[in-house]
Length: 282
Image 1 (cartoon, rainbow, N blue to C red):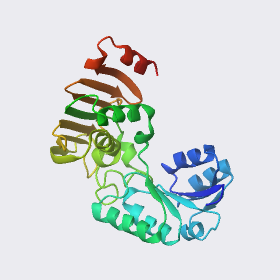
Image 2: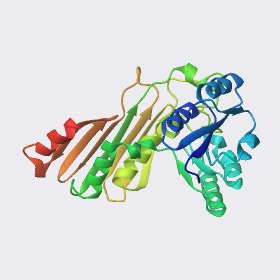
Image 3: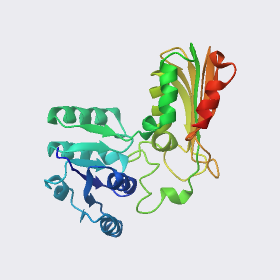
Image 4: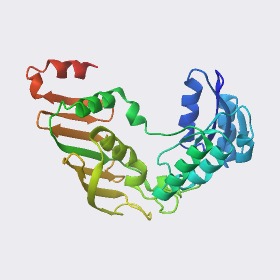
């Protein structure tokens, strides 16, 4: 790729955040945006001074586009991603990569065959605090891992699931689920990225406060490869919405954090709290 990497964004819901990130990134140029909503499309193109199109083919045949960001409804990710990589473009795809494991496997195989690069949007892995926690856990600072818990008490109004840009959400066909698959996917990823793979799951889910097909609340019990036990709950029913909360503990200490903020960093090896004080100041 050239010194300036050209990007295109497909889908301008979550895609508007991609546009902002590309615009602010060094050596990156937003070349084109694509959406079926003309009003949303033209407004974004005017804001960033880029090409606007409702036709995916216009993006894929544009020689100035090196990377395509796919931010459409989740159930379309593989369908569009396959066309992107077949055109020889690199791919960034919003979470989740798609809504079924076979579709995701198909996309990965196509990426490998095309010899292009691909990445998913799991920005929690880039948070400095999450990196510190992962390094500590993976480095054995908590001793034998015992408990890993992720809670996501969010809130969505019924209108979130309605209208031209909302009716696909909370459906099995396009969202692949609800509070767990859509909102909770970052928490699912973060728990395993920090604490290792989950080997067994049991749980319950249901629809409690919305008119949707899929879950607006889920609760799960987890057993990790390390032997640690965990819990995961997600909801879009907890008015007015509260921060994600992660609690991890082992034989030598515990960490507790909310969205973007550390609450405690307790280690038996840090009885005077010097390390915790330093972590809390960051």
